[in-house]
Image 1 (cartoon, rainbow, N blue to C red):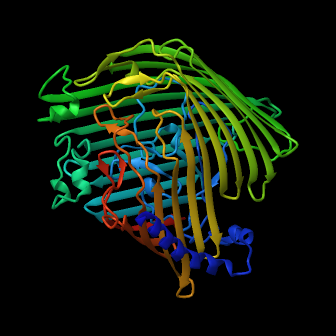
Image 2 (cartoon, one colour; image 1 turned 120 degrees about the vertical axis):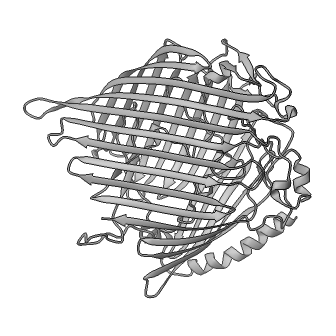
Image 3 (cartoon, rainbow, N blue to C red; image 1 turned 180 degrees about the vertical axis):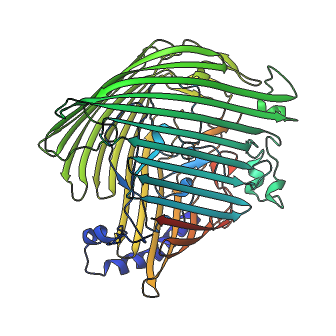
Length: 634
């Protein structure tokens, strides 16, 4: 009842803003076209206030045409310094940013090739499929710094430069937090650099991209007694007993990609396609260290030592692919009524892993097609098949159709079907550590079918997903891998509505979903809402935004987290959820400089202390951050 009353009160407070915004005679469609647009300096003066900047991600092996998206230069999300708090992300975490996390909404995505382990840092750790390639007129720089209480530092830097035929980009994210509970400190850094060059004649071009991820985290395993925390029995947060007082993780990855392409033309300039070669080197190392530990936390399993745990995973891989396509790697789709785009190639991957041991070679054949008919109907498909090594007989196939109803409003209807058949991550097949040992070489392939139906107009989205999971592998509460005896089915409805009416904005992101299997735990309802209002003072030289962020999910048996294996696992002991999270924010913006203040989880302790997103890991209590964001357009 307290929760219901609280949401009713917040609804009543928000309604006047909505009604006030709707009183204006301007239609929502007209306002949506003009609100938060990029303002371009007509004479391109030095360091203008705004300049159009666009980006897209570059596929390392599956070459595809680019689709440029504008960089958000508005102040609507300036205060959402961390990806976990952005309004389009709904994630469970371990209480502070920088630690392990996974989405509240179920999804599945997989790329061809060997996978030793899927690390639980999807929003923070990048792979080559996440590297942004920028389209700028001269240069663009974006700097952000945030300081929080208790001691927290967050620094982001982005710079991209274009001169003649070369484009360079650099992105860095560094985060440090001392934590709130015993043994909870985390330090994280993510760096990527990209250089793209194309010679003037347009015959040869190359792209070099390097990624570095590093995480150093204290792993306390969560609270030993959650009921003690919910009774608020300790004088300070560091007084609550944790499962591990000395556990820690050190994880780092290196990822280097060199991609070169040659455009085939005759003496008359007629184009006969592009040959692209990609070389990629990946290096992964994870380690978990603990000493003076509580044996109950490790379920009294000791295979190497009874007083010290030092588990390590080390894996290298080298990939080479070559393909032909009838479009260039950095091309965009043409605006013609009819076209046909196709690419096909082969990839070789060599993998050498020290711990756990693996050595092998795999070849993968792959192809992609994209055709447009009648100017508004796009048909797409892709397929990949692997043979040899651990991934022998892996396969992926997908088909999709897009009906472009009205391009001006980005109004379209999409439908797709994707099928994945992949070997599980290698650590589920073979692992040897101080507390976990298994060897299961006969696991069946994991089969996943995904059906998707999507309607979009402007930035509004209505999406339906259906997943059928067969032979899915998970970890149980004993931290042992098991395979689902029956197929798991998940249905999902997703709504994203970014309302813009003059200075008023309201972003609403919600999921309705249901799983028929207890091994796939999802809340049936989860949402995040961010109402705000922007008004001008000092004749428009100063912009002020006041707003709030609301998040809620229904109770469910959320996955627990095992820091030794760096994996989430199934559990049926503790439910989390049914607790509202309410943040307040204030942003001041003068030209390209913005200052913001954020008060997080202001309801902490007001309606109890059962605020957990992951079992045994309380979410952050009441917290405060101040920050600055500065953009440069030269």
